[in-house]
Amino acid sequence: MLHRQRTTQVVDGSNTNQRPVRHLRRGHPLGVLRNSQYRRYWAAGFATFTGFNMQMLIRGWMMYDLTQSPLMVTMVTAAMMMPMLFLSLLGGALADRVDRKKITIASDITLFASFGALFVISATGIMTPWHIIGISVVNGIAFSLAVSARQALVSGLVHREQMRTAVGLSATTYNSAQIIGPAIGGVMLPTLGATWALAVSAIVVLPAIYLYTTLKPAHHTSVNNAKGSVFENVKAGLAYAYQHSTLRFLMLGAMVMILTVGPFQSLMPVFAEDVLNVGAGGLGVLMLSAGVGALIGSIIVVGIGESVGHQKLELIFGLLAATSLTAFALSPWFALSIVLVSITAFATTSFMVVNMTVIQITTPDYIRGRVVSVRFLVIGLMPLGALSMGFGAEAFGAPTAVAIIAGVGAAGFLLVQIASRLFSSPDSQPTPSNQ
Image (tube, rainbow, N blue to C red; front, side, top):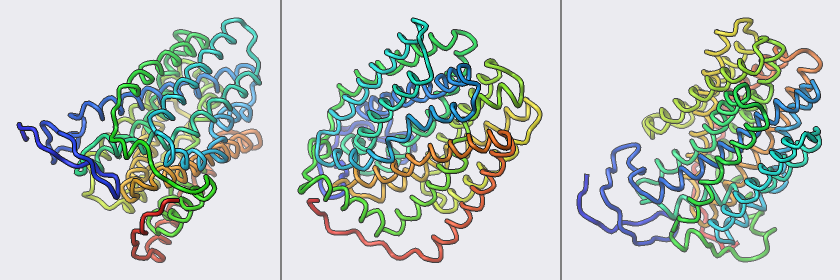
């Protein structure tokens, strides 16, 4: 440990910035949390994503209560995630043109306001399925336009040697909150009821807004100098992600996860109510177990660091996620289902954290917002996976549909890893562009 102040550099891919760093333990996987700016950033992201994902679970439960339709339950996920298909690339361009901190704060204020609006609608007893769908679309738009700026903001907060760990921990906020948020929501449903659970999820976002306002990122990593039109910026980001073979196969691996195993929690209300017959209380237990698995996965992946190749990790975690989800879908016993959903969440979160970490580390700061936006464009495909599960559940029953889709996912993970080994080429860093 260093006990004296020293001057260090912040990574940005092409630029440097001088800033003091105290008590830095380079070898410790969680040493980056000694940086107070990064701690605030991490806590803010976790609060935002947790509140967002709490809402997804609560809304899914309310939709099923209103319609008794598995397809309409998956429509909630689709409404919140679909805007990523159309707006994530625009958000990536904005992240490389506009102050990333301001974009992030504006998004969180919008999320908080819309969460509050849904609480009022529910409390007044006028809730309809279309209220849920409409506000979910608004949330999806706000989230999509800011998600790249939020992720790329980290490069202005940490020391060069801690960049990999910082990005890995940042990825855990998004991926673990996808499980932990619904877990908390699932616990609150039987204890507080859906309306007050909505209120709590809105309150969770409030600290994030304050924490983001206190951040002081290095100026050149907060405001970038991308030139040309937004269309040219987007085109440059897509070209970079495609031409870089490592990034290309990382995106394909994420696509397999998002379209097959990733959307599994969208049907959790159906499994709890109709398959396992455990109701809202059982849903809470299932989601809490998933949350524990996701948290463990996040910590383990950050601890592994670079000791195991990312391709090997993605294959292991991908196959484990697909296998455990298949077993969960076919399980007739609640106790066994608790264990299997925890393993599924562990493997899914671990896969996605590894994937996002390598993407961010591989990409220089001048174009990071746009490349990260391509990754979130892939995440925007999740509604297609959720809807395929919904249609399959309507036609064949939830267990059969989920088991088949998980099997397709296992085959997909194998094919991507085989292709990446056969067709990868040495990557070179393109000359920084103003586009």
